[in-house]
Length: 82
Image (cartoon, rainbow, N blue to C red; front, side, top):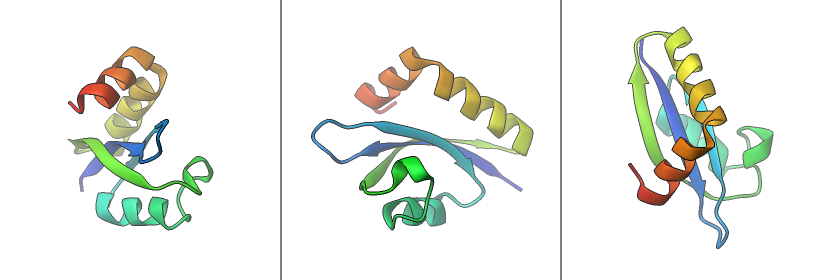
């Protein structure tokens, strides 16, 4: 089974980012945009700007944590859409 680590960017003038992991990235994006995702994502419209695929849940969770804590990497992904 595959797991995804992803980054979303809000479509607001002053955009913010959200990092998460999931098994089904399409379904998860729909949930975020419908207001049923994570509490932080409610009330915003999101677009997917980055994703990575992992074979294990533990590796995906570790990578998610690393990206969340590494502000330099997050800004690089946000501004360059790596």
